[in-house]
Picture 1 (cartoon, one colour):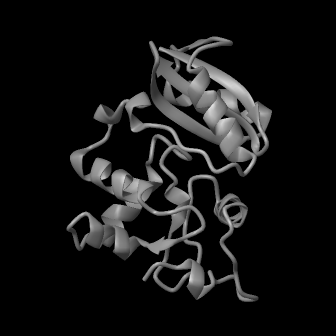
Picture 2 (cartoon, rainbow, N blue to C red; picture 1 turned 135 degrees about the vertical axis):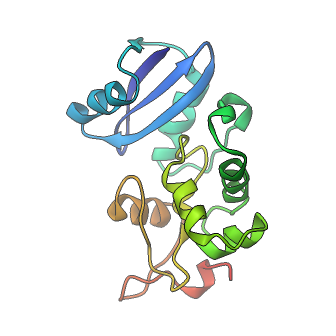
Amino acid sequence: MKFRIFKTKLGYSAILFDEDITKRVFLPEKKEGILESVKAHAPDATKVSSGVDDIVDFLVDFSKGKDVSISMDRVDTSLCSPFQLRVLEAERSIPRGKVVSYSWVARKVGSKAVRAVGTALATNPFPFIVPCHRSTRINRTIGKYQGGPEMKRHLLEMEGVKFDERGRILPECFIP
């Protein structure tokens, strides 16, 4: 297993990979913390300075606010349960600049397990590749996010989502 650390507009990020298949994407954070995050997840992984260039380019461009996408063929989805994979696929169907509720995702995957959807998104191993920040609470408030609520709001605003003075997502950005 290898990992690569690189700088994005949002901070330092990392990718854990084997061959050319991504095993995990680490959300951007401070330089000091990213190595700790990787080593906590994969203590025996080897640091490299190249590899998975297309994924790195995608993540760097995404962090700059560019409208980019990349195939799920580049990630190891065998790490996900069948339910989580259905949730992640549903999440990828949400258009940029729009937001849905966790219950919308649950309905889309044929489930009533809204909390399980939240858990599947909270443990998303491929943030940004799967834009899990596009799901929020039914009351149009941000909800939780791996990178914290500030990062989630920043990502949504970067994609064109608008908020009212109380911090709620405007109805025109919310898919009911």
